[in-house]
Length: 288
Ligand code: 13P
View (spheres, rainbow, N blue to C red):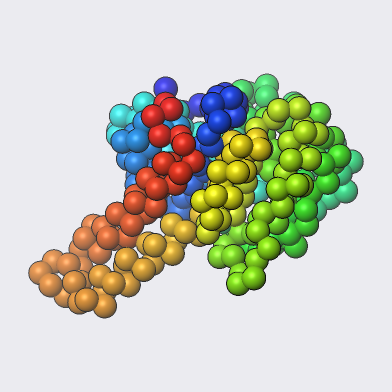
């Protein structure tokens, strides 16, 4: 299977009562770790790339080339989508041109009519090329690579308006936050999620801010139509902690412990463990 858009894999997830993880990437190590686990777990997977991460990696074309070459070199047969995370209008156009298989247009800060109008324009271009699209209503709290949100709960009626454009999947703010959840966080608003699910005609829903959401809330959100869950910060935290341990234990000073392949290995293993756990929790293992 290899590279595909994310529309069918998320329809299948919704019908099958599980969610596909979007795991954000930053570099070669992140990409390879996620691929290896997806293949090992026989799970479909979405690689999330923010505009900031793409810039860091060299640009959208570098991302497409890296992902495409790795699918071949590693013999990846599970379905994989390369997805722009929280894209601007221009960012979406560039990614469509560069060869991403899926893009998110984040028009959540605009009045709903404008969000809908821009989405329609982009959908005409993306769908003509077989590229899937995600939209957003309400806002995800916290900050993700410079995209800051206040965390408003999405209006079900506005979600219905965006769903009616024919967008493939929809992210709605339901009290979720990018990054680590603060002490005293109120949890996800399941009443809002239920209303959104009822107003959007069965479109796969997306839960951003997957880091640190308790298991029970993840499962309940999947039962209410969430078919894609985004995880970013948690992989950064476990990578940093494992790397810190390696250095603090002085492993970089033993033999050739300074070799980057050795230095980065504990962090990569930590990412793999996290991705494995999420695929189990989301129920996407053995679905490819
Ligand atoms: P976290 O960084 O909180 O896991 O959120 C990821 C995300 O939603 C990417 O869009």
